[in-house]
Each structure stands twice: as C-alpha cells, then as structure tokens.
Image (tube, rainbow, N blue to C red; front, side, top):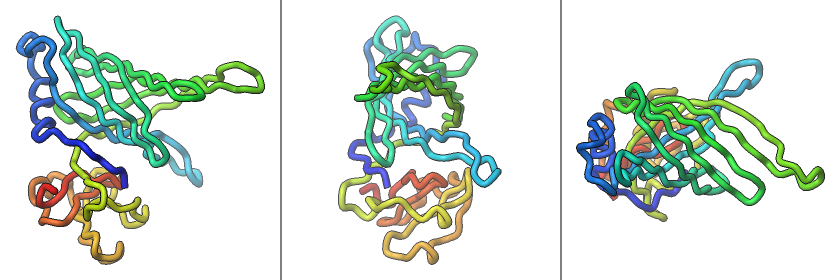
Length: 221
C-alpha cells in the first residue's frame, strides 16, 4: 500500500470549494489545498480492455497572484515517487493542467482534464526516454483516467500501512470496501458505493478502493 506521510485536515473541502468559485475571491499567493488523484492507464489483457494503476498523484495547488495557479506534488507508484510540477487553468468549468515530471532517464509530460465537482477526468502522457545506445530521446504516448479523493494519513507501521492487497479481493471500479488489517482477504466485508462509507469507517479499519488505495482511515490515525 502506498505510504502517505502528510495530510492537511479539511484540505479536500477547501480545494473543491475554491475550484467552484471565481479565483478573484482567493487571496493572492494563497495555498488552495491538497488532493490525491488515482491515475490509471488503458490497456488490453487477454483481449479485454482493462485499467492499470499508474500511480497516485498527490498535489498541492497555489494561487500565486492574478489567477496564476501552480501545481506541485509527487506521482507515487509502486516503485518510486517522482516529482511533478506545472500550471492549471479553469476553462469552461474544466481544470486544464500541464504537468512535467523529470527523472534520471527522461521526462513525462501530463495533460490533465479534471471536473471540479467530482474530481474525475482523464489525462494523456508523453514520455521522452533516453536511449544511451542511440543517444536520442524516444517518445511514447498513452492515455488514461483519473479519480480524485482527499489524501488520507497512513503513518508508517499503522494498521493501514500494509502491502498491496490481492487484486481478486479489491472492490469493483467505483466501489470501496472497509478493510480489516487483522482479517485475511477472503473474510473482508462486502464492497459498496464509496460514498456510503465516508465518515463511517470504524476505528482501526481502512477504506480501500478498486485500485488498492486507502481513501479513509477509521479513528483518524
């Protein structure tokens, strides 16, 4: 399971509320909040279309001045955490974000479209990977989908800091499951709509989504 170490309480409500208001109501050079986005890519497995989790984009949004919006964060994958930064603009009630992630063998450019009310959307990614044999950068392109939620706190060693769950026991897309770390996967409670569980997770348990990401933690630890 991805290990989250920071969380600004109530930032999801703050961020969403500011997304829905004209930016001239925001204070210049003000921090608007933090949100996490699950990014998945479209693929084909055994002849069937599937979504594969690329990672979780944890980003903070700032209004620097005169509606100049900057985005800074990390893309946390199962193998690494890559820095991501860029700009955002609200166009026709859709957040358009241009983000850049640079790493040791190349860089990724993300173009993100995000609906403010639901924090759902899509993205495209252009990768430039360095080929040392040809001494050139080779581009690749893919598209994917985005689902957003508030960033939970998962302290190292806590009950919700556990490895990736078996894919066969994760809830279907769009649903969540209250996960008891003390029970085996086959004995977990049945899945349901994520909204039915929000603010209703028993202490010591975790709310897990289809992508194996902890969305909420009972008891606030």
